[in-house]
Length: 306
Image 1 (tube, rainbow, N blue to C red):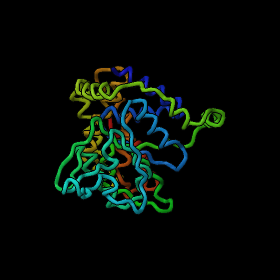
Image 2: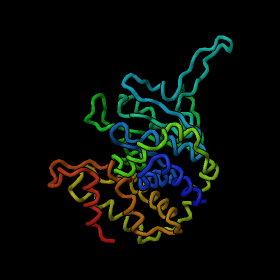
Image 3: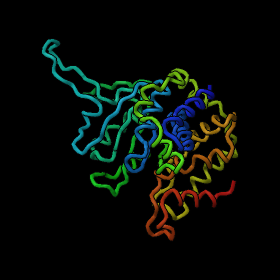
Image 4: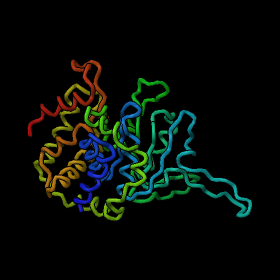
């Protein structure tokens, strides 16, 4: 079943060229049942990656452009009075899908951003006192512009913590950029992209992760990393229990894609930065405060013995 995941990766790599690692990390995030945040400057392929993943996985796709005037009702839906039924009828919002692309999520106000919290954590939406389940599988793939750009709002820590992984695509290398310039329009290629995996197969693959063995010594290693993040003096706050659970689940997914039925320390190290860096805020008084969270997490990893 995990062979289908590799087939999806190969197919998406034909659309988003030169980003094999980021595609693999995205699939690990989705396989682990998490949500994905892609942070980068406009125009590097964030939306194209999300769309290609949804099509290749055979999932219902919905895109919502976040703007400063977007309201929570625009996300989850609204009840409108129906004269014929003599009552209010709920009209579902874009959140009722399998893959929700929250495009430029940090251009919306914190109030609108928070409308996604229940959907991301509980896979359900409560409106007018009624709780409605969301389709399964359910993923939020959000894109975020750098916070120094005009019209952006900083995502609160509670929102960032809901994303299992945070990736950055970066600019393509010379070979990849040349392939983009000489190749066909990506939007045309997306329209002809076939489905490489069915949603039912993805749900089976997700359920199979629980069979990936995790030794007690590996648990010790994950706990040691979490403890070090809280005691290192590099970060304002350390890893939360949710972060350690996310790290272990992502490590299981990485091991499965490597074709192993057990997790090794290299699996934890492979997913550590995308799982943890966006959750940790560098401490300004730390000697390495000039470094970003990603560099500090790598520095932290070197201090924790395997």
